[in-house]
Length: 393
Ligand SMILES: *Cc1c(COP(=O)(O)O)cnc(C)c1O
Image 1 (cartoon, rainbow, N blue to C red):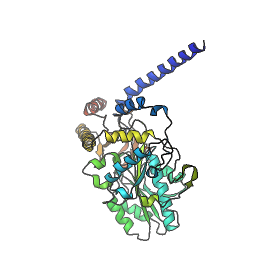
Image 2: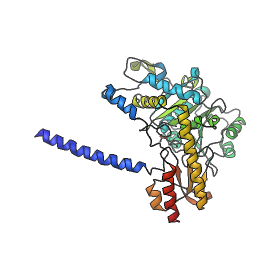
Image 3: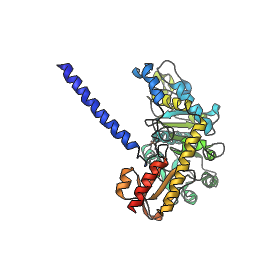
Image 4: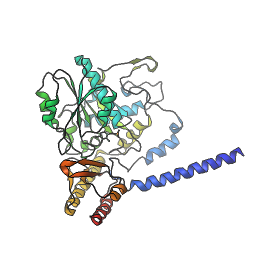
């Protein structure tokens, strides 16, 4: 009788899962509002995983991918190869590169703020002030609060970019500066002007500066475009960068990449951990072993030309959408280098159907929405949206 009860329970549970899967599959066709790639290419990975035995094993990347310890069952060697793939795309030299696969863009920013503040404290004996624009993703504000760091929120212009004169006014000369540059703001896709902001910092030579780049979405595609210099630390010096794995790259669950230099990593609060036989500068002990493996699989099954093609398509479709909205006379904007078109907010039924995130800017007439033109957001689907918008006008 026990068996009966259990099998009925399993049938019910599976029916619920099927129902959820059907809903998720249907919803992704119209998921226009958030910067995630719904075209996962991990089919081959899962085929391998299910036959591998690894799916029945607890694999854990507790440890430093650059000091890998074979005593534990981990994928640190693959994680290190992921870091070594991305490092050079951001201008890091292979012999002065350190990083981890993170749980998310926010986790990467957490490491940027933590590594930056510890580094600056070690160099200057003082806690830094975090400078970030009010258009940047809220995670930097949340994390500064969490890490008990003083924060200066710098006003942004109408394009979502930090205003250099406002940074100048806010800088405190006898405290180190932990500057977070937004390389692609969440709502408008604005890119902080590093040249102009660095020129402001240079006018305050007494301030020791650490620069962290929040490139959650753009970090996944800018390296494959003509704009790659904005994320090249040899052209625009920075100390660390974070981006998400589930935005451009096509991960099927949240993940990210955090990159920095050995020099920064070696000037942290080291916490020698005897039971791991290691120095652990990062925030987490246990970390995902599957995420690095999936990203490793993606970069080993996607050529740079393929990433470049996906990117060109996204940017072309975004420009097309902006032009079509212009034709309709619907107020719309698209920043350079961005795949995010933002526009006057459509009626609630349309915004709801497409999951369009809301924002508000009085300088642009009030309520706004945006469409993030990711890989699954095709012209055909955008045309349906435009037709619906037209009938609602
Ligand atoms: C999405 C995003 C984040 C947060 O990343 P998660 O991976 O969702 O934690 C941070 N900054 C920017 C600019 C983003 O677009």
